[in-house]
Length: 84
Image 1 (cartoon, rainbow, N blue to C red):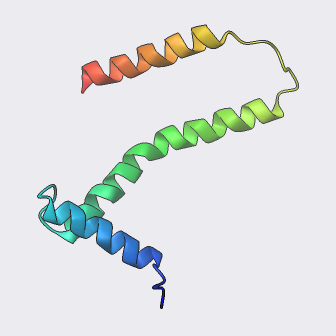
Image 2 (cartoon, helix red, strand yellow):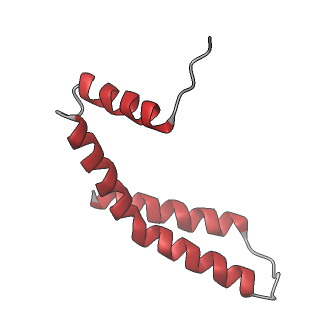
Image 3 (cartoon, one colour):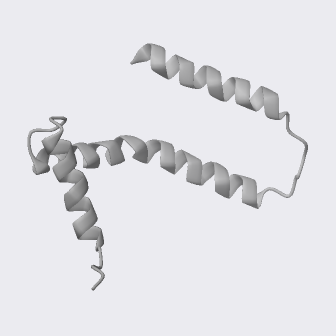
């Protein structure tokens, strides 16, 4: 008979993997690290939601320079990497 895998089973397996690999000392530490990562990402996600809403509300379907956008995004990522 097939076994149904629940989200709880999956999260326990993932947490156990991080503990067994030595990346975190306990399952609680895995959960704390995950919650910390989510909290760190919240401002960026809030800004992304704002930008999406702004874009959806805009009636201007103007052209955009994809290459310039990608260069700016790459430069920002490089700046973050250098700061870390």
